[in-house]
Image 1: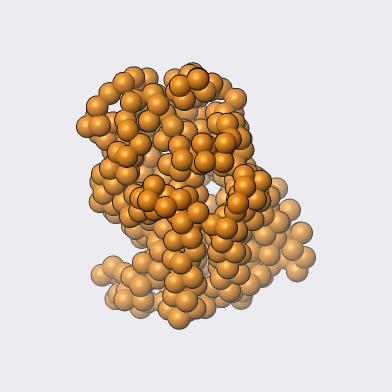
Image 2: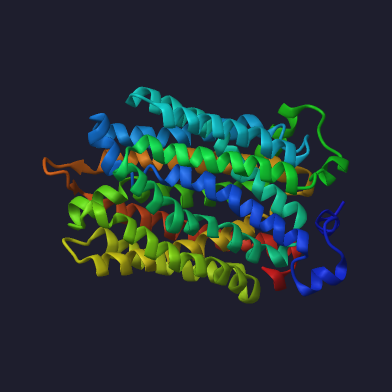
Length: 423
């Protein structure tokens, strides 16, 4: 069964030519809502860092462990789930892991100590880390490649929305009451998502008609050892390692190194998030129009420049901090969206779920490694400021350049497979 056949069940040819059908539009919004809560749960740890560390009396290294615990547990669950990822209705699979994610976040909200919070992050990672791969598999099944840039653009707008809505509100709740309330608010949103998926999403089960390995372990091994997937997994590793090095310590760096008051953190996330909400869909359309690899090249170049500027900043004004963050996120989105759209064209139809799960696993494990590596590089001074943050910037630049080179060969591989015009 071909890619186009799998993409056909939810819309007719005329609607496909005009754009998204009504159900496709609802589905994209629903998947973006799912991603919003998953991403918010992860990235809220970064801005809460400046609050969590003194509240729980933990060091920057311990905080880095709490952040990476999610990533490592998500990486392990991704591998374990890969063998079964193509054997169930994707809607049911999404609900299973999302309910587990909600339970883990509830544990975080109730955590009285650092160690209970750490346990909560592990449970959340075990389930939440797989949700993104299920979402990607659903997008790949139901949308043809020439639309996936736009779909990824809208779905990844959840990242920006989490900054515009989630992080400022989360920080407000944490400052107004305590950090437990921030996680509690995510639980409330997650329960809303569960009911929305149950009521609005149709079954996603066309892939079950394809011939597959009966044994889940054999299915996993076949995906892992497929030579045409190796380079894609390598690119994912590089992108995640670099990205996760900066994120966990962003709030601490902004407050203690840039001299921005903690009360201004919501403003930085709000403004940069607002810009990103418009940037995501535009990048998605651009990647479908001019090509996903050229868009990725642009994003890499901008990311390198802005990361070097950001990691070398000293005491500065709120305006400069906002501008740098906005431009850095433009670069990040311009890499994230086209790379995901390109990767979606690599796996065979009967291995999309397992490929996405393994990719998510590689991403989380690499991200966890990046967080640990960053924690080992930086030093926390007596006044709370971070030393050697510029060295993290150099590592991110190096991984970005290698990822760009590898992505060139990935897009050539895809061009040979599906046709050069849409890559």
